[in-house]
Image (tube, rainbow, N blue to C red; front, side):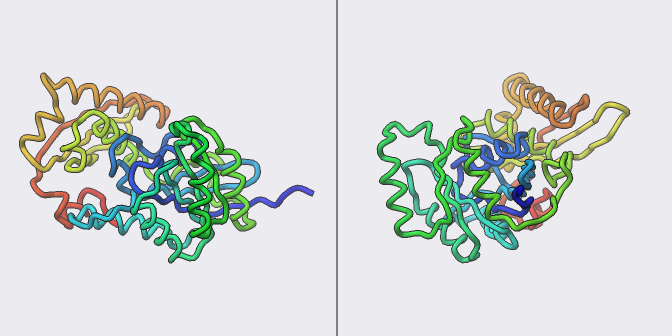
Length: 297
């Protein structure tokens, strides 16, 4: 007798920069969440849909939970992360191998309050120099916290993901698929286009700018077999513009070129992309500006 089909929602939660988006992309098999080495790369709830013969996981990728509540943006990110735990069937807490921080405890406590089964994914085991330290690390945190299962993984190297997927599916209810077999996310192409531009900026600019920039799509038109897309990169200060644009416009050109290629790969059609940079002072601490730029629960 074959196993029943299972489908449900999983909140993927953790502090910033532990590899949540990399893990969601690996489980889905397509890059639907942007990735960089900088915290606050993920700013929106993004649903990644992983479908297999055994079942379907609707993975809710969330902004990293962090202790800072200083700006309107910080408060929005924490609300978005906490809100993602509502109405899910299970949660996946992602931590970095060998390092447990106060913000990991903050994320676990948020999940404990939600009262859903929680699986611990210990990511980046490929970077752990002393592999013998992994078992004591697991033992320490399993003894004082309640996890449905623990999985050491490397999302980047695709290690341990089959076992993790099986565990998550077993926690899902018996159900028909929640989404079509060819669906990979609930986000629009317009949203994904903005995120692909922001991803390249996050990877290329210095530490002082990423948190003060956002990307807004001003035009998204289908022109036969081509998409014509125009986006604005908003920054908070006039002196950020030359950093974004680069000497002779080279950085902006590189951002646009790589982002356009990624769009064509994801959307399956040619893309004509235009990118501008504009200034709106204090937008990241302005609730009205945040709503205008798409930061709403």
